[in-house]
Amino acid sequence: MSSPAIALAPSVYRIPTVRFDLLNTYAFVDDDGSVTLVDCGLPFSAPRIVAGLAAFGKAPQDVRRVVLTHSHGDHVGGASAVLARTGVDGVLVHAQDAGYARTGTNPPRDRSRLLGRLMDRPAKPGKPAFPPVEVSRELVDGEVLPVAGGLRVIHTPGHSPGHVSLLHAPSGVLVTGDAIWNVLRLSYGIAGFCADVAMTRRTAAVLGNLEYTTAAFTHGPHVSDRARERVRSFVAAAPR
Image 1 (cartoon, helix red, strand yellow):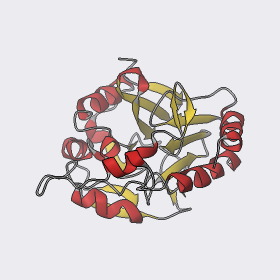
Image 2 (tube, helix red, strand yellow):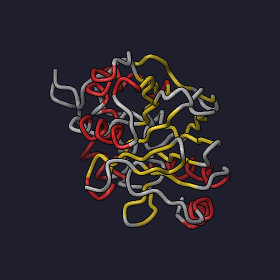
Image 3 (cartoon, one colour):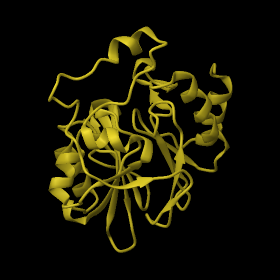
Image 4 (cartoon, helix red, strand yellow):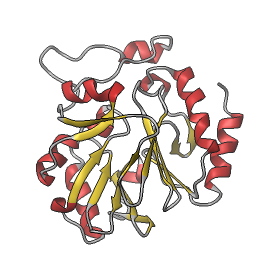
């Protein structure tokens, strides 16, 4: 396992929850010491998130807000346990993914793809895909959350209907969510996980037009060397 937490900026940390940086949670620290978490990994991730917080001097009771980039089980799966440990009363997630978070169900997969059809099977009756969570507020595109000087919500649907990326202009950090992965190389991830593969590729292109110095991925290590240029080159060259 890599370090429990990696500083991306004075107020921004990456917390790996799976070996080799395959899955990450992000933490933003406000001037008053309160913490906002972005994504909560899998059901077993809560202890690793707590260890990550401790690595930069924080504890579960410092967490005031939990934001989800989308409602897939590897991002919301640990949220129920994190909410229980922190006392936060619910998550913030885009309106189009809120129903999935509340019911513990994954968004539909892209049935134009064989893997999507294979994966788009309902869970067993009475058994959710991940622990359901309360939704305290539904996010909308373009809003700026009062997080460490401002965290902008960018609706990038395709991976899921309500998938969002998050731009923290004060630090120059862009959290791509699953719009773009960085496992071995930049990619659009596993097509079978997407609700609409073509839409994922169209909407991710907007990320190349934003201003940032660090690209932070929920799958894979962050990039701080020519991050914007590398993302722009990727979305320009990748097939739509």
